[in-house]
Amino acid sequence: MMKKIIHLPIYILASILFGFKTLLVYSLVFDMSIDNPMQAILFVLNPFISAFLFFGLSIWFKGIYQKLFVSIGALLGTIIIWANTMFYRDFTDFITIPVMFQANNAGDVTNSIFSLLHPSDPLLLIDVILIMIISFKRDTITYVPKKKRSILALSVVMLVANLLLAEVGRPNLYTNVFDREDFVKNIGLFNYHVYDIAQQAFSTSQRAFADESKISEISDYVNQNVKSKDQSELFGIAKDRNLIFISLESIQSFVINNTVNGEEITPFLNDLVGESYYFENFYHQVAQGKTSDSEFLVENSLYPLPSGAVFFVRGQNEYNAMPEILNQQGYYSSVFHANNKSFWNRNIMYDALGYKKFFDETAYQITEENSVGWGLKDKSFFTQSIKYLQELPKPFYTKFITLTNHHPYELGEEDASIEPYDSESTTLNHYFQTVRYTDEAIEQFFEQLKQSGLYDNSVIVLMGDHYGISEYENKALGQYLGKEITAYDHLQLQRVPFFIHIPGEEGKVMSELAGQIDVKPTLLHLLGIDTSNDIGFGTDLFADDRKEFITFRDGSFISDDYAYTKETCYDRDSKSPLEDNTACEPIKEKVMQELNYSDEIVYGDLFRFYDFE
Image 1 (cartoon, helix red, strand yellow):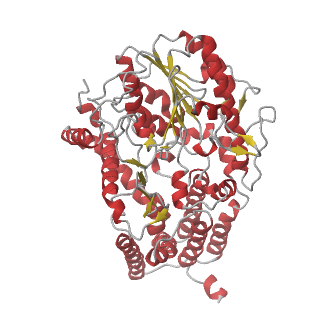
Image 2 (tube, one colour):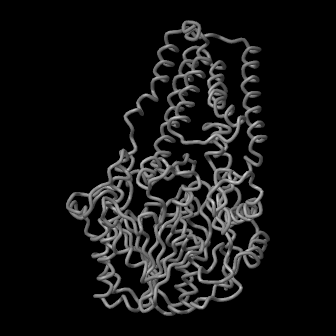
Image 3 (cartoon, one colour):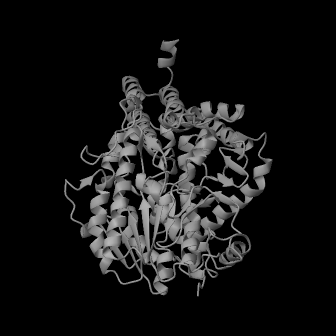
């Protein structure tokens, strides 16, 4: 039997070996759930269908070129699989074309990349080596035209059948590609990449064909369905105060008021809960842009893009962002971030958002002693920033972006004030230590603000930018939390801390649903700034008539009564899946509409047609 397989035509042998490897990666690396028998069949078959289509093209070449096509094709395909494997380990997602163009970020993430390497990675080359050896030992076969056409026709028929069956099993699969996992398990990793290329080409053309009629339609929707009709009681309570926004890198809400090895993880933030407006059901809503997406959400009250980062894809659009609005109100806007100014294209995007000053790594003294992981340690970062902060024109709006609590969560013994957790996940074990370090840095910064005289006349906002522990670490995280993490639990783990600290005001724990999309209108209203002419998809978190749901980029959502994720509708009281998705459908329609409207604004650069005055 083995001899028969080895003596198969090389394009068939390559299809079998490469398809089997892809299927193993699907099963062992990509944590993809199977929802029905049809999906299970497609999950198994699509790696072989894609491989047969590609390697079947080799028969159109002659001689050595036939062997080179198969060998180089197997190697390039393996590189694509490996790149997705690395990306999935960190983000539980698949690479898109815009992410590939963000490769200039790689120089800043070397430590993070090395931490994602796995001893089994070289095994991905086994089939490539076998294909090369067998191919170059064999004589090439010259196929007659009829045979070539027959093989090509068969491969196309199998591909079309795969695409049609995927649409039958998952209606609207090709029109709402928000969940890339769903796409990959139905039509395959390589077909997904081809589709992604087509989507990016289409999105690039959207700006050229956009006109002002669409922005009027979106404005009407926002006015009728999103904006609060009445001002909250806290409108203007912080008028003319400085606004200090601190982006807490990778901090999730499960660490707040929690312990590890009997030690509080975030003692200062725990105390701050009682002295601030703390939103315990506040969710991050980022996509592939991670921290840059959280910035985009906060500044614009628009959703991130389904692939890539807005900061790269549409960095020179017209926006009506919070820095620009505050500049018009007499504020001075700035950003403090001790990193390369071009990282995430910030030097371009910050101009588009209206920031007047960017204190990047050149503003800081960075040494081996005061840096770790991604750069300057948070304590040194705040200490070196305070002198610049004191010199800013008043009132000011300024944003601080921390670095220390970033994957792979490195910290020297001299800075670690609690012991690491004990699990099989190095990532989770060290995470608690770097979170604690950032907590200590925030406490130190509050003292520095008080000593500088800036504290009393400021509003200090702290927000987790995105998750720190990915779905890939669910087993270890489940050990820490004492439960097996379900799809519903994973959605709940997307909560991040959100504090609004107003010195002189009593604090309150807010339990209502909230998300990063809501930050802009909330903060502007606290400062007494009218947003009736703005266009965004968030609402003032202190208003009574708030929107009833929080949207995630993949089409999942949470409402007061239901949660929807992974094609399943959950009852929030029981946390149990419902028999069907009927109860979630009305909100799901609104979710998709908002995501599409937001995408049209960004891809079409529609704000260039709108007068916000």
